[in-house]
Image (cartoon, rainbow, N blue to C red; front, side):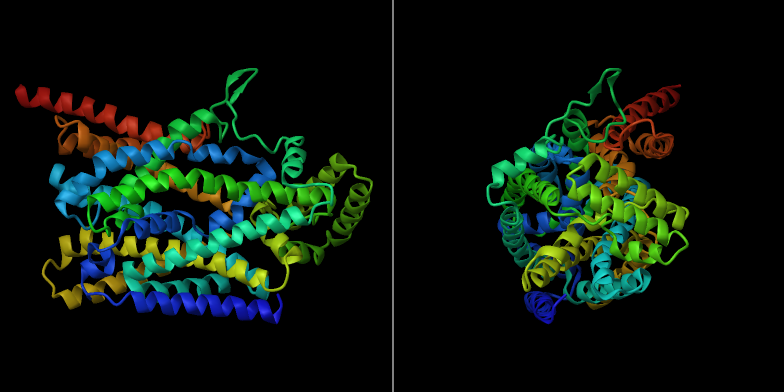
Length: 542
C-alpha cells in the first residue's frame, strides 16, 4: 500500500474517532453510556441498526461469497422486511412502555429472574462468540497489509476497539456509524464502477452480469429442490431464506440486545418504528449490491488472470515447505490454462493447488474465500482509493463491534452485576463498572478471534451459523412471553433448556441447513413449554 493510501487511511480513522468522542459528551450514567439518554432520531437509529449488522465481515467476505457461490446468499435476507413489521408492531411498544435497559428485563416482568438470566446468558454467549469472529475480519486486513502475525494483529485490533468503545458509549457508536455508512455507500458504488471499467471495452455492466450468469452466478432465486426432492441441507434457497431468515431476523432484531439497544436509544416509539421499517426497505437492496460486486469481480477475472490462491500470505508460507516445488508447477499449469482460456482446466488447477496447501498445512481447509475481495482491492484499485476502502472496512468493524461490546456490557451490568452482586451504586460507580465490563468483553472477544484464523467457512457464513444455534431458542422464549399467556415461568425455562440441547444435537448431526435451526428452535420452545405447562397444571390440580 502506498504512502498516500496510508495517509488517507490514518486521516479518515482519526477524524471519525475524534468526531465520535466529541459527539459522545453524555451524562455519565447507565442511560447515557448504554442508551444515549434515549434521544436519537429515527435516521440515526436506522444507520446505527444497519451499521451494527453490516460489519467488516459484510464488506470483506460478502463479495467473496458471491464470487464462489453466486448471488443465492441474498435469499438469506428475504424474511427480514416482514420481521421488521412484526417487531415494530408488537415488540417495540412493550419495550418502550416498560422503559427497559435490556431486552431481557421484559422476561422478568413476564416470567421470573431465572428465565431472564438464562436468556441473557444465551445472548452473551452467542454475541460474544460472534463478536470475536468479527474482530478477526479487520485483523485480516492489517495482517495482510503489514505482514504481521495474525495473533499479534488480533491483540492490536482488539485493543484499539476496547479503547474506542470505552471512551464513547452508545452515542459515539451511533454518530460514527452514521458517517461510516455514508462513506461505505460512496466507496461501494465507486468499487462497482471501477470493476466495470476494468472489463473489455465492448463490455458494460449488463454484459458483465450476463457473462457471470452463464457460469451460474446469478442464481438469485433457488428452490432447494433436486431430483430426490427438497434438500434440507441446501444452505440458501427461497424457502430457507423466507422462513428461516424470518425467524433469524425476528430474533436478531427483536431479542438480540446488540440490535434492541440501537432502537431503545430513540426519542420515542415512532422514531424506533421508522428506523426499523426503513431498515426493512434498505437492507435487501444493499446486500444485493454488495454481492453484485463479487459478481463483477468474478467477470473481471474471466479476462484478467486471478491469483491461483487468493490468500497470498498462506501461499508464500506454503512455498517454503517441501511442497513448494509442486505448488510452483501447479501455478505454471494454471497460467497456461488461463492463457488458453481453458477455464475448466484453470479451475481444476486452482482446486489442486488448494489440496496441495492442505498437505503442506495438515488440518487446514485452505479456504481463500475471505481473501478474494481484499486481494482484488490491493492488486487493482488506484492509489488513494485503496486507503479509503480499507478505512471503510475498519470503520464498519469498529462501529459494529463497538455496538456489540456496548450491548454485552449493558446486559452484564443490568442483568447480572446490579441484579445479583451490587444492587445499589452511585451513578458514577455504575458508569465505571460499565467501562470495566466493556474491557472484560473486549478481552474475551480477542481470545475468540485467536481461533478464527482457520474457521473454514466464509466469515459471513460462520457468524450466521453461530447465531442460528442460539437465536431460535431465544426467540421462542420471547414469543411465548408475548402471545401465550397461559404458559408460566417454570414451563418456559425448562422448555428453553431442553430445546437448546436439542438444537446443539441437530447442528452437530449436520442433517439440515443452519437457517432452519432458527425456526426449529423457536417452535420447539413453544411446543415443549405448552406440553410442560399442561403436565404441571395437571399435577397442581391433582
